[in-house]
Image (cartoon, rainbow, N blue to C red):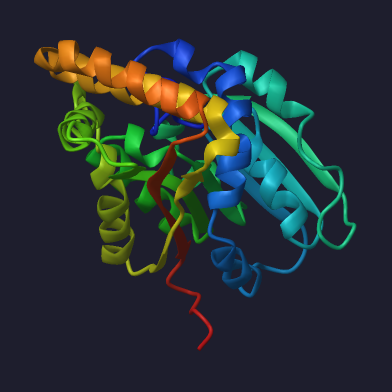
Length: 291
């Protein structure tokens, strides 16, 4: 991949490595945790194999998904954290809880590699593949290949916080729709010869897994940012507007005024934002969702 595969800034893409800085990932972590679809984890627990769980977290970033999930799953766990960014792996390596839901030990190792190159043989022995805010950074071919690798390896997958392109800001502003459209176009941009999926990623992934016979369960996972999250609101706004302007330069004069106005509202505790994402639970063909 030509871009980092780590806790993607699907909600704040700038096209730069700086957007994946640990400070940003830590800032968004509470909103991520609050948004994740816990019902999918309840379903997942019913289908986990007995014995040690081997969990591969793709594009792990600082390890926030592991911190959230490890303590929600029972049994001995071996987490293999994948990312291309060595600095992020350093943060993630010691960040997961030491024990599982039932007190069993949790072990962690890291692998610095391109997750788009993973194939079924690489996933042999894996119980669960996880990822957070990753799919929208991939191409259709990459998502299709990843789906095939997961299904052929016979492991489950929990793919969370993929951007879906819908944003609700309150109070509304006349420029919201134009910025949202430009942002979504930026998410689907051609970069390094790769056409990113952006907000179509959830649908593309669900279709790819379904064609391979897997059971796919979808759930909504929206960031809901109130006045008490002004710091995250400001960071998100700057990235959201910046990406929109990068995509459509003629928006810049109006967008500069818009951004200043919105930042002042966030500072004053007058802004609410809902940024929609989607979560997917994938069970291989050998498993069935309990009735």
